[in-house]
Length: 296
Image (cartoon, rainbow, N blue to C red):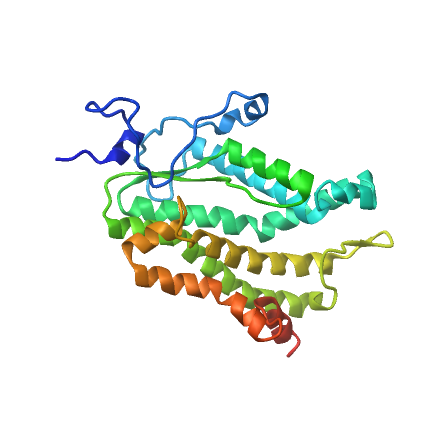
């Protein structure tokens, strides 16, 4: 019997040296010794402890990793959307820049947080249903890089972490585990359309647009609702499309390895808003929400 190399995640192989390369569903990283990484020491990789809980079991270590990854992700998004990087300081002053970041952070947590967190939980649930050990582990270097990039340049490119999976699975099961995350994003995107319509009907937020939350000393909460709906739709379709790219550790490579037709179909679904936008003179899911809300 050939030893499954993923078992090396749980215990060292007695047959090979420690230098052996290990294939993992999601590869972890060794924590850095830099002073900046010490801030994220609670997220450093640890040897997984197997548990006997059900598929919804979350260990204390996993909860910490999810919490800190979500917090760093939210902070980076606040720097990008609220502060527009450090360039926003010269435009509006430090005080207003800080206020914009603080106001934006809870909005992006509501709008974009579920796209990230539920995507990873989707992987976890399907992996555990297939008999694997599966827990989320944050990537300290990826979080630090993403936060600093958003702070300085107002651009977000971040690898918050991934669900670590260990267990003996078939190619088909591995494909199911990989596709679970993007399918969660597709579901959230579709749910966001009727929910957005309902919110716009109740609040009239479609008339306010977004990003201008304070005017003449008053908070424009309708603009906040507008951006929550907008970011929800764009985040889920964007995250799903990015993860379906068949490259490196992304989900698309595992899905294509399992079934090329399924991969192509889902990839085209996520890609479809781009040609629709250009072929219909700017038509988008957000415009659909605004149009439907105006019908009542």
